[in-house]
Image (cartoon, rainbow, N blue to C red; front, side, top):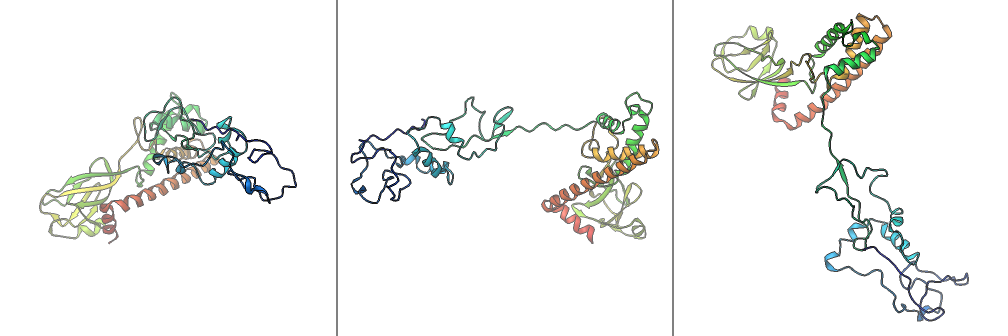
Length: 357
């Protein structure tokens, strides 16, 4: 129900109250509102509320007390009373809303492909914002549906590099198409040995009794940590482990030409957990290098092409600067995610302490 305030009835120049202007000689203090709003120096002692005067500030029924108070913000009540007392009626409630702060930012999208947070689908007609029941009702907040993530492809990476180098002859069917493919493979191989947040990997393996070495799984390019039956092993140089003898449950490990060398030599079958850098390689269609590492690889490829084939010194410098920027950005993100993971994963904290010994 919309709020409508009508004029207060009363007889002019009588003992009652009517909304009328006063001359300048009435210099007494004037109260802001309520039935005694026209207090004067003298003579108003006989003034009382006019017959038919409606009380504007009545308490709501018990079931509604507290509800309306929570819907009107600080400062809004005073502004609302000033607006209501300023005329005979409120003809257009939407005009009043323009003078009250809207909690939604201006220009916010209130429709389109959106779902109401915490409730069913949005109704076709929104609830009134201004009503007698609550005075002020904030608009329904909406939350946009997230878009589905899509990984850029190798073909899109190539198209980007062709555009950035302004060389159509490196595109599909061009005479330098093979040159571009080779440069992409070289760029990925150049950065493949560095650990980033997107190329972390883990693998499982088992020891063989009386055998000091275990092959690194093919999907793991580099092993960075090894655990035996849940206990982290300490990594040392392969030269140091080669001179040790003895058998038993492994305590130390070293990387030895694509394999893991253990000491003591395992005397039984033990379960190993390996963590390190994944072997991603050049994708046939898409992988993490064309998504998270796209900027890094694109810049590296441009630098290789400008330096080794196109002989463009300015292009080399610009591409090298872009590569440094992309590499710094990935390293910062890797450190950030590493700190978050170590703070929540006891196994990672244990591995970190073991590596520090």
